[in-house]
Image 1 (cartoon, rainbow, N blue to C red):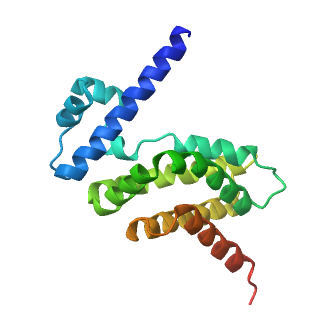
Image 2 (image 1 turned 90 degrees about the horizontal axis):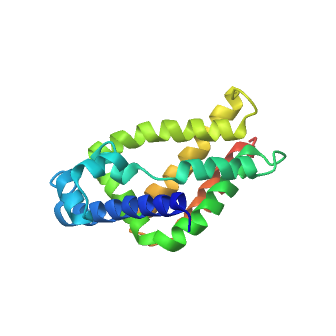
Length: 193
C-alpha cells in the first residue's frame, strides 16, 4: 500500500467518523445544542482537526462528494440523450451505491436539513452550486438558457423527491420517488395541450 493511498483512506475515514458522530449527536441533543467541540471529542479528534475537514458546523451535514460524482456521471452519459434523461440516469446511477450503503444515514441527514433553519438556508446556497455543476456537465462551453432551465427543473424534481421521502419517514423508497418526479417532469414538458 502506498503512502498517498493510506493517507487518503485515513482522511476519508476521519471525515466519515466526524459526520457519523455529528449526526448521532444532532439526533440525541439537537442541532443547535451540539457544539463542534462535542463532535470532535466524540470522533476522537481535536476541534482544529474538525475545521480541517469542515469549515463550519453546517458543512458536516451538507458536505458530501455527491455533486462532483453526479456531474461526472452526467458527462459520461451519451450526448444524444435528452438532458433530463441524462440527469435522471446519472442521479439513479449515483444513488445506487449511496442508497444501498447509507439509506438510514441519508434519510436522517435529509430530515435534519429540512427541519433545521440554518441548514435549510445553506441548502439553498448548495443547490445553486449543484445547479451550476449540472449546467457545466450538460453544456459544451457556456450553458445556454435552455440548459440552465433544464438543470434547474431537474434539480427541483430531485429536491421534491427528497422532501417527499423525508416527510414520509422513508415509507416509500427514494429511487421510486425520484423516478416518479422525473416522469412527471418529462410528461409535463412534452405535454403540448
